[in-house]
Length: 313
Image (cartoon, rainbow, N blue to C red; front, side):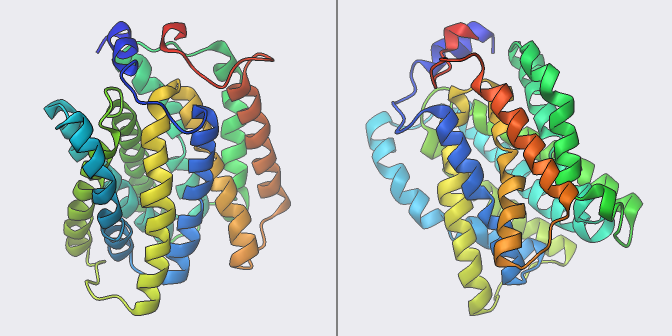
């Protein structure tokens, strides 16, 4: 799709409840709650992946009905974006969770967050979207911030199979970046809720099959686990990713990718507060670098409005 086609398609998006940058930032913070909930649930990778999607579906279906009545069925291409994006999302959830045990949380977190490079790269290659110099200037600082926040220097490759874990983390990063790119692209023509619900349906099925094949799926988790996974479904499936689906098409790809780095920052803070974890000074420094870099990259020139008109891209 050419850049002019994308600009024309975006004019069909319905009004949003807040500015796109603010909406994407709120979404990233909401997503940071999910890792803590999954940790407290004690669920396997497949179980957590399936139920955090499955428990969100009833609410999403209710949200889809008025959109479907108003706009009719979405184009077939949009549904395909959703279905393929859901498979990639499931792959990211399963592969990243597996990589944590194999290579450690630090390296796996760093590798999966290379989306901040891959998503703008995909947008440039496929949509010919311009990448501004400001982003390229601050990108090394963002990467250093991600490395420090992940605790890589303290933890290193601390898992039981670093070689396999590195491969799984890289595959998770590719899956995550592809999912974000398709989620964003699937919202260019409206029908955002319908397309996103297709993502969640596809991710539920793919997570169940992948978890079963990997031996990491329990169809009958405990009530306590279900309660925490329900909270994860609310914060990520119903609020977080739905808001990303709504607001990311309204933003340049690099801005959306940078704002999603608030998720590991929020997860680190919540881990310290809720799980009594003790982040190191280097990890806090990494958070500060991400926040400073995100502000410098996203805010842009002084006085710029919180909108990203397609014709300016």
